[in-house]
Amino acid sequence: MNVGIRHDDLRRRNRAMVVAAVRRAVHPSRTDLTTVTGLSHSTISAITADLIAEGVLVENRMPDATAAKRGRPQIAVKLNPQAATIVAVVLSMNSLTANLIDYSGTSIAQEQRHIPTLELGRDQLVSEVTRIVGRSIEAAPASPQRIIVAIQGVTDAAERKLLWSPIVQHLDVEFSDLLERQFGIDVAIENDCNMIAEGLRWHDPQHYGRDFIAVLLSHGIGMGMMFRGHLFSGTRSSAGEFGHMVHRPNGALCRCGRHGCIEAYAGNYAIWRNAHAIPDSTMIDTDISESDMRQLAEKARAGDMQARDAFRIAGEAIGFGLGSLFALIDPAPVAFVGQGAHAFDLMERPIRDAVAATAGGRLVDSIVFDILPDEAPIILEGCAMRALAAVDRQISAGSAPERLFA
Image 1 (cartoon, rainbow, N blue to C red):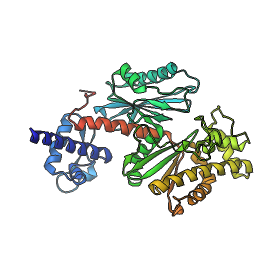
Image 2 (cartoon, rainbow, N blue to C red):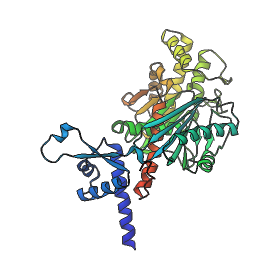
Image 3 (cartoon, rainbow, N blue to C red):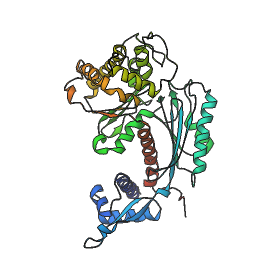
């Protein structure tokens, strides 16, 4: 009996290695999979044969240039797009987007709606999310295997609910339970910044494969952290609430209701507030548009001292926060993501100077900063890969998804 258990565990592990290798590679051959996984040719052949029979993989014959080589041509394998689908939903400030994504990670249907997130009641908010998910499911050839919802705000580590968000009025919205009851499909709720980190890891594993930090510069300030190739989500919540670390005790008013947070100096609304000499005890309820922030940055570049000072203050708040973080975890590459990254040239020197003034500021000028102004596709890729990885685990356990087509 023990031998049987060990054999099943080994089989699951080997299947997981093969599926993961195919997902990361571009149409690998069986020889490529042998090299990547370290498994024998016979094991690779047996596993790929099973996965093809189950409809998880399909063979992909190489073009003529490869076939023309001497000897037997290599036949690549790839994920079967028709093997499964997932629904990825992103809820951000005044925006709700849903994507139906096939098993290869390709978006096959998308819907985006403008909704007044701060004005919606709890039932209205849940209803909007439920309806857009329902329409995605209706567009699928068969029932999707998983739903994932990325939200700007704090989510619990169990991936069940939204604990708090600056874009909605409500606390403890149990999206997973509500959606699972409605559709009978497994649901995960994720922090959007964590999905940025996940998306970067999948998009460029050479650069973002191990240790890095993703900082969202937008309406709010958020963070996703990858340590040794694993997403850091904390023990009880999504963690990484960088924007709500205290920069100045009893300082400027933050959207979270507290005072002195990094976001209260570096979020779009905070930069706008300082640039227009609005008292920092004033809450800016309106959504500052990307075009407004771009115009403000141009004014700063043209020499407007009030605007330049607002971006300097933002850079200092971010830099002191990063420096404190680096004192705990050591410096790591940082990707600045989101619309606020368009003005990074106005903040980089204050960020580096502030980091240098902290205990974590050793070799500050050698820390790599990447600038990625468009967060939407990165969040979507992170959601897709996170949800598809869960489907992969089911397949690795020997539970192949229902074939979409005969």
